[in-house]
Amino acid sequence: MPDYWSTGQLTALTGLSIRTLRYYDQIGLFSPSLYTEAGHRRYTSEDMQMLLQILVLKRMYLPLEEIKEIIQTHNENLLDTLDQQISRVKAELAVQEKLLSQLEYTKQEAAKMETISFQELTSLFELIRLNRSDYFTNKQLDKMREHYLHTGKKAYKQGEKRFKELLGALKDKHEDGVSPQDPSVQSLAEEWQELMDTFSGGNKDLIESAEKFYAKNPQPALHFGLDSVLYRYIQAALEE
Image (cartoon, rainbow, N blue to C red; front, side):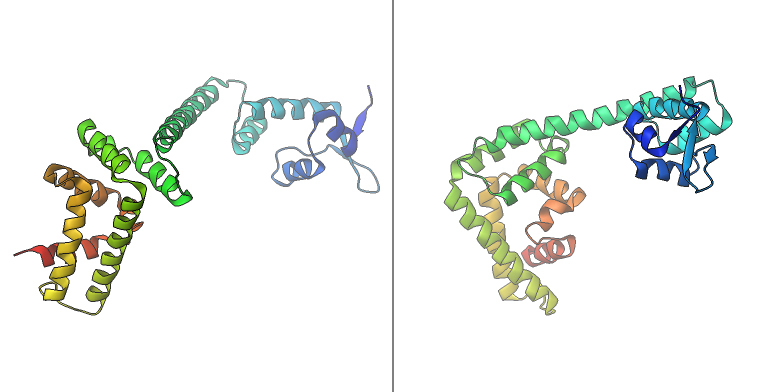
């Protein structure tokens, strides 16, 4: 066994890059014990043992700062550290399992459509991610799904386009300072309400659930250009 290893030899033995070794040195995690007169790094057998310990701790996915603390304090009681890492990994697994479920459900729903655009796919995933079951009953979710699947792609697209046009026109009215009681605003709001009734099948409970959902999760509504200020403006126009 050699008395020391060069940086190149260490990278060949461990698979670490020279850049990584230099970074470890920079943050004070792992530094060579020796330098040649020319300034080249040389690592001793003790250095090698320390590096192997660092690599094992890295395989446990411990953060470098925690590994540094363990090495510097010579902490041999790692049970608390392991408990913390187990908790972290469990939390990450829960996140990944939830993501997997959302992706599978998104694929299942998307597969029911003849074709699906990138925008529709991302909107669908966002709605699923936000867990609509907290706001809608299973019966309401089934009704929305059935309505979407049976409306027809072309008709649904036309309705969605008109929905955005109405919101754009209402937003212009609001920004121009037009009163919500102005007949032109009320006319646009009424047509908007009719489209809402078409999408919901006239189900008031469904509309109420949707309003609660979008109040807590504004991102999907913003996809259509509807924010809380514009929504209140429309509601004011619809008041008798």
